[in-house]
Image (tube, rainbow, N blue to C red; front, side, top):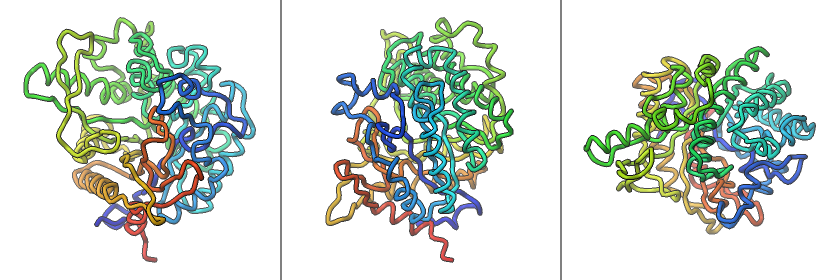
Length: 441
């Protein structure tokens, strides 16, 4: 079994969460966000569940930080809700700032490094009403939010990520319609795919002007595999790799977008989008990598662009139906270092699995998650040995939580949450990780 001593000195082990998924949005002066309206629309979310109470982390944050400390973790990756800090998207809510003040101070008091994410998907409804990420002005409002929250917390956080998973913010939400705002519109998609990176660039510029150090972004990656060796399936897989994996990292590190994606999105892109690429391509201080699974792709003739389809694989699957493929994490860590960021620090900012966990006799046995976690840690260790400058690993997630369109159905946590009583029960994977991270001092 791996331990912390198998990794470089100073390697950060942590767990991650997101504001809307755990805090509860019905108190603390939080304003409505587009996930509230998305969840209120029939058919969008399992049982029409929303994040109004979630895990009640807003009131139980001290208990949750104690769980992080007791697991011998070094850091906590959290997000700050735009709708809580600026309920109308413009004006600051003092209660929101005070909450995050207490939360960051609580982390520091427990010896935890605060890794902050500015945007983890909860856009204030007032801005969504104006077009959300299809509206260029939203990017400037995001920079305002970034400045406001950083003026309060920036002196105490260890690192700041601008955006979490822009592919989900743009493609999953505007092309596939699976997440808020639930659109299926290629023109909206093209604008969101660009504007989310413009928002990142504007926030980066604003925070750098304030002297804020250690700024990055969190991108998600999905291993694309052709279903067969046919040229058509290989081209389909390459296109998916370009949409999911290359669009955002190439926009940042090469100041351009993949040509095979522009073939579909180009006619719908914002006017003069090329003029924004220098801003988007500002150097990062670090890169966050989220990785969960792989997908097999085949050409789908006779269908509109992108003319591809998923093909079921044969590997074991999680509760989400995602194949377990730790080799994909090693692949991306090496590939990103080689092709895009060189020696820039990389953090695995999310990796985890959903499992149908139950409490029996006061305990939760999730051996399958323990295996998942340690095989992906082993893949990370191998990537470091092979030359990738990986500085930390954050498991997703600390708590079972509101899993977006899946409601409270899917459980990713190291800690079981009873969504009736809100009782927290650490799972066997939590205890295994705590043993592996013990310092023996």
